[in-house]
Amino acid sequence: MDETPVQDQKLQRLLRFGQSMLPADRSELLLLCGFVCLFISPSLGWWPEELRKLGAFTASSSPEEFRRLYDFARMWQLEMFAMTLPIRFAGAMTLLTYFFPAQTGTRRLAYWVFLPVSVSLLAISVRLLILFGSRPSVLMSMTSWAWNEIRSAPEIFLRLGPGFHFTLAGLLFVGIAAWRKRGRPLAPEDSLSSVLSLIFKRGATDHFEKQTLRFAWIMIVTPLLLRIAALGFTSAYAVFANAISFWPNWALTAYQLLGEALFSLSFVGVVAWAVGQERPQVLRRCIQVPRLRDFALAAFFPVAIACLFPFLSYLKDRIEWAALQWGKYAPPSVASYLQFPGIGSLWAIFPAFAEEIAWRGYLQPRFIELYGLARGVVFTGIVWGAFHFAFDFGATRSDQSVVYLLGVRMAMVIGLSTVLAWITLRSGSVLPAAVLHGAYNILLGVGIPLPFAPWSGFAIWLFVGLALFRYWPPRVFGASGPSSQLTAETQLESTPEG
Image (cartoon, rainbow, N blue to C red; front, side):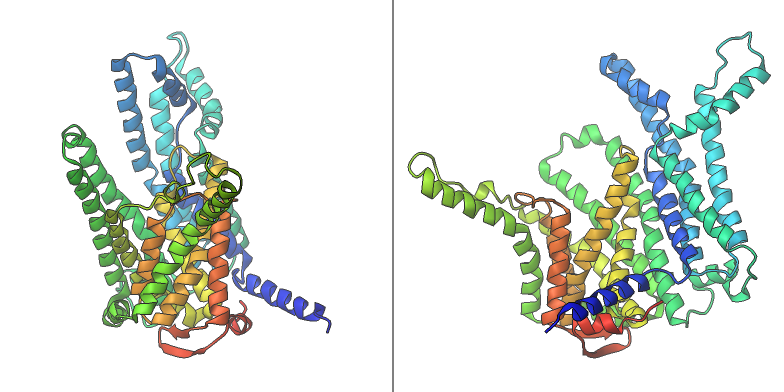
C-alpha cells in the first residue's frame, strides 16, 4: 500500500491548521506584532550610553561614589518606569483594536497608540536633555547648542537600548497595519466608547465571542496593575532591607509567601470581576473534586518528565561504574543527579490554582466552543503566555535574547497546555491542572537539564499531550457542557478555517 497520499493528506491538514491559526486579515497579524513590541518594551533596558559608562566606572569608585551612582541608577529606573507607562498603555490599546476592530482603526490607533508613545518619547527626550544637555562652553550660543542636541538626538535614542528598539518596531508594525486599513468606513457598534463600555461592563455582554475576548484582554493587561502593586511591596522590602537581614529565615520565607498570596488573591479578584454573572458556574467547575487517579496523573507527568533524563544519566553512569570502575571509586549517587526542592515549595500550587481558574476554568471551554478543540487549546496557551509578558523581561536583556525568550515562552505554554487541557477535560475539574501546573513550576531546574534544553523539554510535553489526546481521548467540555469523544486526528480535521 502506498503511504505517500496518506502522508500528503496529513501534511495538508497540518498546513490548513497552521493557516487557521492566523487572522483572516493579515494586517491584524501586524497589530499583534505591534502589541507584543509595545507591551514588553517598557520592561526592557532604557539605559543611555553615558549611564552605561558610569556603570563601568563604579568598579574603581569609592564606596561613597558607588552609593551615589547606585542611587542615581535606581532613580533612573523609577523615572523610566513612570515615563514608559504610556507606551504600555499604547500596547494594551493595540491589542484592544485587534480584539475589537473598527472597520477603520486609523483614528483610534492615532489617538490611543501613536499619541501616548509620542508623549512618552518626548518626556524621555526632555529628561535626557536635562541629564546630559549642558553646554560644553559658555561661548556657545543657545541656538548652536540646541541645533547640536537636535542633530544628535536620533543617535542618542538608538543607543538607548532594547526598550527604544522594540518601541520603534512596535510603531512600525502598527503604522503598516494602519496604512493597510486606511479608507474603510467606521462601524458604529465597534466605536471606542462601545468597546470601553463592554470592557467595564457598562454595556451589554450577551455576545459570547466578545465576552470571551474581553476576558482575554483583561487577563493580558492585568499583570501591569499587579506589577505596580508588586513594585510597592518590593519597595517596602528594600526600605526595611537592613532590618529584614537580621530576621530569622522563617520570617523571610513568610514575607515572600505573603507577597505570593497577595498576588494570587488579587488575581483571583480580577478574574471574579471579569467573569461576571458566570461566577457560580466557573466556581463549581473549579472546585469540583475529581477522581483520585486524576490527581495521581497530574502529579505523575511533571515528576516523570523532570526525572527522566537525570535517571537515565544516572543509570548509564552506574552501568559504566559497575563495568569499569568497580571497587576503585564509590558508586554514583542518585542525589547528585536529582535535587528535589523542600516541602515549602508546595506553596507554588496555590498561585498555579489562581491562574488555572482563568485559563482552564473559564477561557479554555469558551475558546473550544468558539474555535474547536485544537485551536481552543492553542489559543488558551497563547493568552497564558501573553499574561507573563509583564514579568518575563528585564532591563539587562539584549535584543536577541528578548526574541529568544519570546519563542521560549510561547513554546512552553503551547506544549504544556496540551497536557493541562487533557487532564482538565478528562477530570472535568481545574484542580488536577492546578496540581500539574504547580508541580511543573516546583520541578523547574531539578536534576540534569535535557540536551537542547529547553526546547527538548517543551517537545516532550507537546508529544505527551498529543499522544494522550490521540490514544486516550477525553470528553470535550465547552462552555455549554460536554460533547462527544473526539480523537486528536478527528479534532484536527473538524477545526474550522479562518
